[in-house]
Length: 315
Image 1 (cartoon, rainbow, N blue to C red):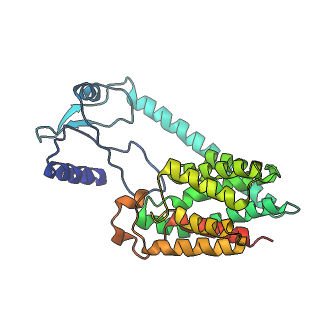
Image 2 (image 1 turned 135 degrees about the vertical axis):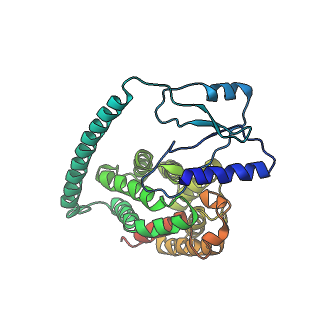
Image 3 (image 1 turned 45 degrees about the horizontal axis):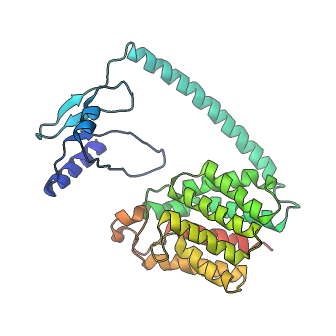
């Protein structure tokens, strides 16, 4: 019902703007258990594309396509008939239930193992690894805070996405190399395996670029600057756009100027705080009415500030 309401409103809006809409497909084409919201996509329709859209398919996730060119909502094509559909769906449901139960048992075992390992985790580790561990743990603890912020300005999945990355880092940090450049590259690989969305890709880019600079013997400030430069190049964001860059830039300015890690963490926190007074110019929040997140910090910038505070607290 909700998708039907959204679809009708979108159709009315497009027609009001003198756009001719020929076909509409509406359904759960991509879903997430923890995401609140919906997605709309527009396709410039050529005759060949229309022909392909109107063709029959047995793809089970492709919902009914409607011809709205004449405003009558006629269905163009239903899913192609598949023999014994009910029987196959029933078998699939049974298989899915079994797989889910197995996965649940594995997760439970993993949680128990993690709890047991956590008691001695970090003991005897280098300062570098203890700082990486502290950063990851702080992000996991902040999941609900980050989620609450993102529900106001984005998909509501920032906390979950960051937690997944942090958990992957925690699971592998003991085996990371001791050399800082290689360790940062290992962090990037962990994030690549576990984090989705734009934030995951940009953080991987940041850590890889910073890691290369450290391997070349550059300072922490220079490495951070190169990471930021890479994020801006590939992501298109800038300081002042209300993103994680608004926490990274102030921290870089402190480190690049010879400041301490503690001072850099304070600068990152101040940068995140400043996003409360910014209108978004990038990311999902760019498409949200600024009134919805007025007075709220950007979740990405807040995650950077939280992580840097944790790193600075490890001596």
